[in-house]
Image (tube, rainbow, N blue to C red; front, top):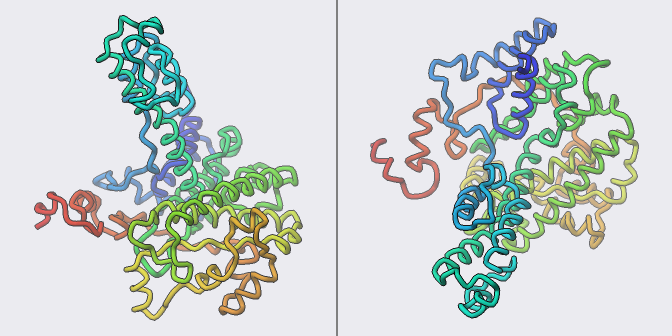
Length: 454
């Protein structure tokens, strides 16, 4: 039986790639410190108790309308179960096999061998075996009806591994764009120090909050609770390498060795390359207007914004590591620009009505070479060029993050997690559930449930 400390550490670790409410993480952190006997200062305890007072455990209804996970791809569990019934050579597989593209493909190949079907040859007119061919292949006892049923199932299943893999990659990019490399932390590194685990889990939960429908900027992750936990870290026992996965500020990176910095630098550069490839694919498909970045009808703005957010996160952390390693000369030669997110037309109109206009970074983005062309060496984007374009459009290149890593954030006040329906705050979680089921704020015609609201 795991100890209470181990159970609570595992609960915090499992939250790193999910969307647990920060208030609930604060409650778990308090329980962890009590179970482990960790001594914390009065300011840290007061900050945690302030947040934990809004946890689901403390609220009378104990309910949130918000999903506490990122969207996961639909696996092949149903198809694998159907195949196990139709094919004698295919055993019943555990549920987790339906989320593993390699195991799905292996099952398809095993089942295909039973009816002499080669993987990838799935044309219903060209690749099916007729009666004579089935007899010659040694499966003449299988009727045309039974054979066709099995062939159709495998034909549909062959599309599944790629869809599952693409869904997993998209989810991973979404998670990275929100909370950095938290989801890639090994458990042993995360759990080696309870205060480190508490800080990483709470900051990750704050970073994973959903965006609001607003023109006033999104909620910043680093709040007074995160700051209190950061002050609680002991220099000699804190796992600074783990913290650098989510919070690579100078105060953290000065405790991280060169080898570990190099590992993080390589990981972030690999993510830059991967995300750049996805951005280019989306760019070629939709061709948004660079001068406004207002979304067009039919554009996959969600996929673009998820990738753009991951690019910004990877770029910012890559810059921070280069500066910490004294390798700014790389940025002097290769300084890929930011990627702007697509903006809904109503939000852009709201900006204009308020006198704000487009974000000043939009003009800089529109003039610089596309980042994926820079990484491939097809276009030059040295630091001096970025600085020149920024100044031409009234943007301070260093402070705005175009040429330097952003400085350590200033802690913002703690705010309870809002119940959101398509980004709009709704006071009551039960009412939020009803609004969502009725299609309120979705921009689409109301669903039948809207009659209940009337």
